Length: 147
Image (cartoon, rainbow, N blue to C red; front, side, top):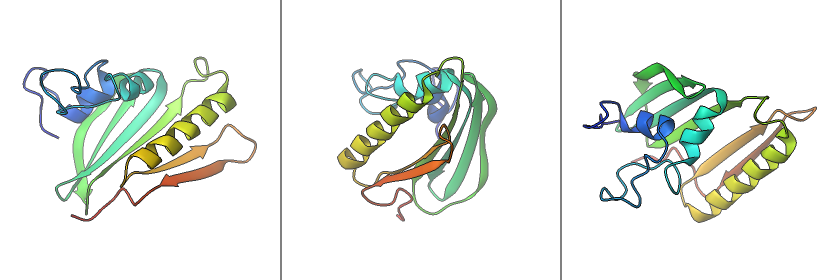
């Protein structure tokens, strides 16, 4: 939630809007992360009609929103929270994601892999591309863990 000294925006906003902002391979170690090379979530934010992010940290619930890669609602405190975690909601752009069913399968597979590799991660995927919405949960333990 801290403001990045060079960019003047919160780290979570930087990771979700700026390509290559992940710090895994640079001098800063793991200060910021948005995917293996800092491209994952920021690219998804860029190519979505809209996305929302909620973060639980240090007893506080934060919220911010984006449209087509631009921040439309700055980071704000919306309440108190227990535990830690990050929820990210995306509305894909139909002109970009034309093969939505195949795209959905790829996302579901990736979430399954991440749940296996990351203890404490819970991902809930709601696929609305089908006639009847299908929800899948990928979990090793709950994401909103108490401290």
